[in-house]
Length: 287
Image (tube, rainbow, N blue to C red; front, side):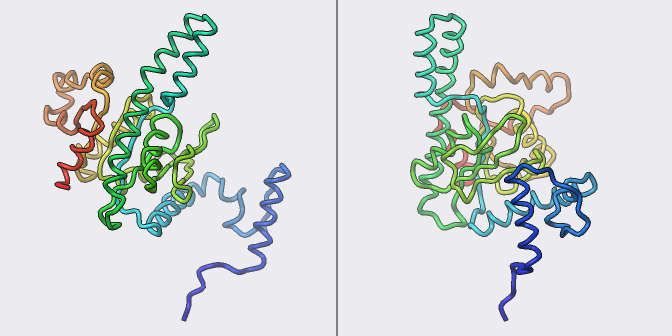
């Protein structure tokens, strides 16, 4: 007997129609006791239903990834502000035309930083090329936060060779949408940072971290903590950009202070070469 996995209730269709009308004409939602609970935004947005929202954000991407055969990922973190080399070059040209010294200095910095964009793109291409002809259980799928900058670069590297790739985007006060290189069926939107970070780690076989800001550091230190405390299996953690990381991190101070063990500094590698980053991962798994 075939199981009916879809609700065919006419009332459900009616309720979704009502929600659609409200969202398209701009009318505010009003409490309605008779509305079905699971299509009632007033109810689902209550403080008391937060746990349900957590569960939904955990479950929806997980089921989608399972259905699409995604078992293992390589996660790439990094700044959303890093420009592609062609964009940075245009910005510098415009700045020079303006004659504004400050604009020129900032545009020159963008050009320097754009090298990270190209390196992230190259790294992702190595991973994607390796995985293209592998059976699903052996594939490594590039996964990013789905936004611009380094995230876009990594998704783009996989896209360059026709490989599926994942974007775990998040709603922010300033508008952020998925970059155009993510596989459409693998583009997900999150409200909760915590659930998004769980999904980063659930299938991660390696993490490569490019220069970034608070968000990048938050993601990096969460992973380091999970590995340090044995809450997750050891995975290769590669920091890309030795000049940046040696200036940004002074973890030897924590060892001197006694708040870290010396062996904790062995939880990650630092490199400036996309191929070396890929080789660190391959060596770890004897691929």
